[in-house]
Image (cartoon, rainbow, N blue to C red; front, side, top):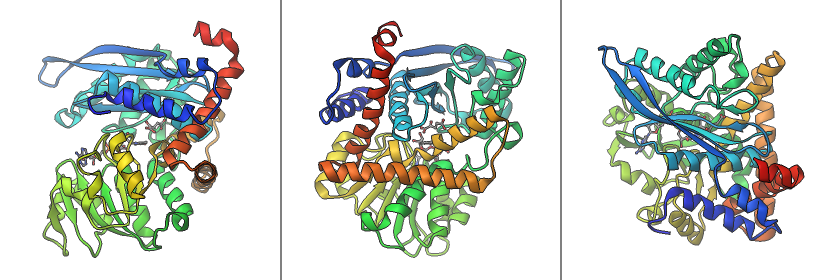
Length: 420
Ligand SMILES: NC(=O)C1=CN([C@@H]2O[C@H](COP(=O)(O)OP(=O)(O)OC[C@H]3O[C@@H](n4cnc5c(N)ncnc54)[C@H](O)[C@@H]3O)[C@@H](O)[C@H]2O)C=CC1
Ligand SMILES: O=C(O)CCC(=O)C(=O)O
């Protein structure tokens, strides 16, 4: 596996899941390749009058189950291969949750922290100008991901509406409320993971007042820390891109969110019994639940054996390498896999899309109740499959999703397969 790129590693999950199903070879052939990846160099005017260009992608991996769906990431290390891998994971995530979507993903290679607000707006609008023909409410529906947020989605939805000459809110989810966003999308990724942990606490062998370490403190990390702390759990360590902090007695998520808003959680070190911690030591903190909520491959062969938690909630996409996965399996550490654990985000995005198409907006309690039902329903199905067939939860989640994808591919018939 070493030396294998991230996309090939993702495909190994497909081959592995296929062993547990009686599949037509056509199904695997269809799922092994992205349907289309569009690459564009975006050119924007900077505030000082100069022009600067940025590489950008949108991948529509597979649309057998419906329009492709997935976030747009702004990150200085984004690559085509990463975008295609994330779009592959979205395909399986939407199938896990039985959403009427395929999988997609987009990215711009940029460090948005180096741009002014007006430059960021120009870049967001340039992305939509370049990809207006690729996306659409019935074709491909973007949403936020790393270093993008509702403000960026608002600019993008506005740009799409100007190009189309009419509002089309269902083209993008994760929008501000004023532009047709859904209540509850903001914390949906974390809330989905939270409902899952709450539902499975006893089966996971977690104490009712667990000690939790959170890696990454953006949208997913901040909300999971808040929700778990509100439920009586103790957040004992937090990291962001600048470093980490540790306190066995617990860190108040509200003060961590304030510190992050002003720069970094590392500013908390030295106050209220909180000490600084090297980022790489976060995974080794004494805790019950580890929540990776940053980027891919952060838990690997070199640090997986240091984990002390008895369960891992993957809010990030692909935080464990296959080597780390194997180490945790051997050590009996349960992993709630990304394609289930962080699916609350896309599930509430689906609710937003439905509300935009109906022109009727739901109260927050309805959003929460429907999300909870969906997480518990698919969590139970995957847990059962894992127990019945002796699989890890990740393998069971892939088998569960692949069975749904296979029946959709087969239901379309051969014509769709050969002409798409
Ligand atoms: N926003 C969403 O709705 C969803 C996000 N995800 C996934 O969750 C993960 C986090 O996404 P968001 O919270 O939305 O992004 P975000 O942009 O809001 O936050 C990312 C966080 O990661 C931190 N970070 C970056 N490099 C780090 C490092 N080396 N060590 C520790 N922290 C680091 C940053 O400081 C920041 O706090 C990503 O894998 C994303 O794909 C998954 C499903 C939905
Ligand atoms: O909300 C969405 O549509 C997709 C979110 C996303 O990019 C993800 O789940 O990784």
